[in-house]
Image (tube, rainbow, N blue to C red; front, side, top):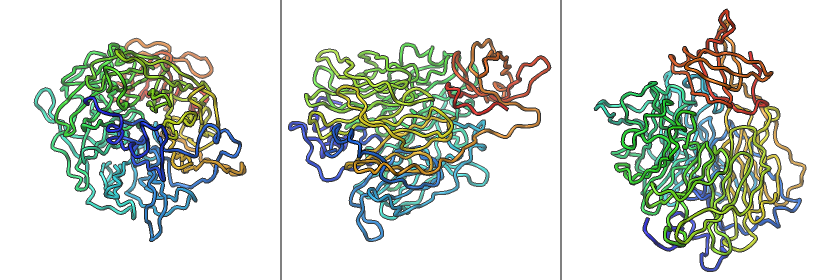
Length: 624
């Protein structure tokens, strides 16, 4: 990006109609949210909110207004389009996609289901590599779709079970009918490995989790793995298709092109806990990758860009920038994905380096980067482990602020520095409920840059498997005080993170979770309760003589693991078979795992599978 006005960049991001840069207030009728985190920069900022302010939110009348029943778990952020004509009537519409491969069009005020369409049978978790259980029972539409308001089209990727095999298809559907407007395209791709052989895209070993991106007239998607299972087959991709026709782009990005690795373990996934690929006004595409071989020595800036933030040309033919943390070897060896979080581009800042990016991962370092030259790092700021992604807004003084979560806290950082950019902590709130992986997702609303109108919104993660509710929080970013908290949904599959992003539009907040969409806002009676929460058992059936245990790893030497069970008992595991079967997700000391296998005569569990588990033992199912 070259130096240009804030107004120009906000226009490219879809925000200019909302924010009056010079005046400070936003004169608005209706706000639309047509992509993940509101814009292609992924700021998560709605600067056109005139109703929800710190003063109005902290009043006792704010709360739950409507609940809408859905057919499955929702991992996608709700999208919002105002003034859409459906069945002959005009509505403000919330679009929600579920893991059952269903898309709903819901009246944004009443909660009435206007339309529902299903795009095929989802893939049941027992058919995933290793029975990966960090999703819900079904995997269908796993990522946030994207809307092109100019054509009235919603783009989605469905994962379907057909003829005993999984298939990915990209769809273009009408906002008015939810019917396909073009022939859906089965997703395929190929890439050249370092030894000259061809690697084919493998839908059975690929997860499409990162939110879709619409830029340059194209739709882009990132692909990852299931629980690091089938790591000998799974490799991270970024693929693209032309909008409208869905014709695949001629080029793609295969992130790991190495022909061999010490442990036959490849990956370099693009998952980002569901955060979306980003794009700047020049059309470059940005994303972050996860771990590769746990030997720690397969990274290569040409053939394997693991643990890195990357910038690609819009046609995906050219890598334009790369940032790899200096501790990348450590991250590889401890499964410390940099790619557990997403990359956000900032609107232009004052000073020598106007174009900045921010990204954080599992080790909790929030990196402030030069978006014009990703290899240039301006500093790392500790926020706590991040299975999450940042947000951004601008205060009344014109100062950019980054909102970053980690652990159970959310911090607001001022962007400072005319010559060398840096972050300075403005406020912090430490009370977000979270019993799973560190961090959570935030959104920001404000009335332009008018003082005392900004609100940070966050949805926590369950701390218990029963009742497994999730709470919505509203935080005053000026002082870090809580304005509101209350139950806003459910997440009964406590083996997988609830990567919920709240959507704020026109005085209301929308939270999609398991089998429900909740609508919150002013004027609540306080009498409405959540519907009954279902029980989800994601445990694979055991074979005769097989056992399953949850434990915390204390040490590992070769394939011998020493773990501590929930009752304090120490146990030895032999992971030889799990490694041989490629059902071994490298655990790390101090973190939890799930293992299945049989006990030998000496009491050692001969594990056929070892996966990651949540560290909070209250979320563990009973051993069996």
